[in-house]
Length: 93
Image 1 (cartoon, rainbow, N blue to C red):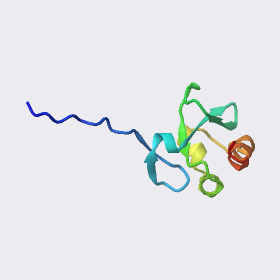
Image 2: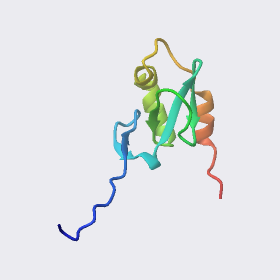
Image 3: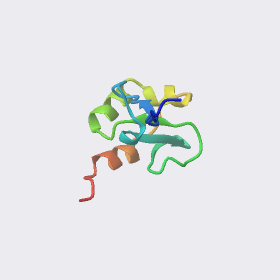
């Protein structure tokens, strides 16, 4: 047996906006509550999740590509106002 230790791989997810793979910890998990996309800060809300970079550019791409309804397998548009407000607010210092 060799003396090597295996570092645990960091889980990766794909941003539904820009379609780039990134570490799960660098992305914001989104879930659907009724007909609204809401941020899941802790990653513990029930249901299917989609991931997006916490950047307005990626959110805009996801909305334009209709990525959220496709990711959540729902018909029709989903409201993203709360999600946009969360992403646009400045990070706490």
